[in-house]
Length: 143
Image (cartoon, rainbow, N blue to C red; front, side, top):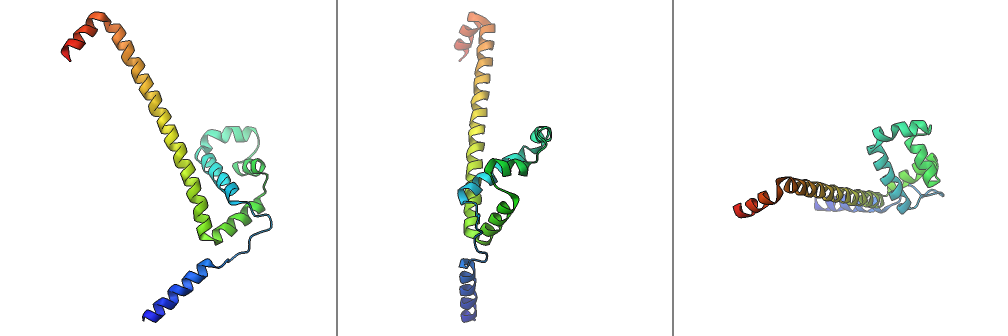
């Protein structure tokens, strides 16, 4: 039984390391694929907001990406298929995209928190100025 399990594990290990698909001649580099997938994620998330702009420019999200990255649909499809056939590289690409999206999310949350804090501070100053100096003195005595 152990011999069969060891053989199956070895077969699985060697089959994962083997290239199923040869890289296409016009393979998109991994870093460029990260950028493309990042933009695709952002554009799909904002699709409802940017749809009027895309309609005005008579284009689609994919056409925009093809033009921006100077690629075509065949090149993207072949590159995607190749990277999908090498799971570790595909995972690395998606982990990088996820990390970029996470950093952007944290930056936006930080900016939103900073804005809320400044608005809250401005409201507090306004309330304090409305109360006047006597109210400020009474608040200080209460504390």
